[in-house]
Image (tube, rainbow over all chains, first blue to last red):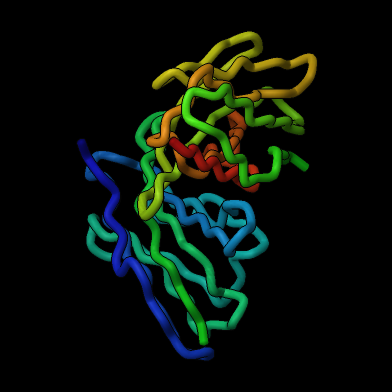
Length: 112
Length: 113
């Protein structure tokens, strides 16, 4: 069964450093998403991406965040200058039709 | 705004016990409703869904009925197994806005032999 692959599974970074979280969505999917889950809290929408541009973003997704689909297969989330409160599990998802979300296993980001 | 509220966990049950995890929602339109499950170390997997009022979603012995009058979508299973131990998330999405999912906080279920 097709999968969404996220790397790395765990990333530790120092405050102020840039991080790039990587995702390989399912190849024939058209819509791409990033969600995050701070430990013990709900899963929150960050951004959706369609047709090579951001289609919607939440208030969490400020200027420190950016997304890119650089080569038609990868979908990346960059955090320019990490803060302690960016520590969370980040999930990538892709979708072909209205209902068929497929999520990756997540990247646990720890900012120290 | 649109939101999902689900019962706090953890829920601890013995094998073969009945399970109910409550979920209620607030939405401006007519959402589709979902239950996702997250097994340890894995991603979010769709467990079941319902797209309109009175629909019943079912999968792997789990069921949930879309109740518009009570704005609820409670997850039920008649006899849980140890392998059902996971975190369960209720979620909704609306027909517009590129269909982002809005999640509840998640409920951890632990089933003991």
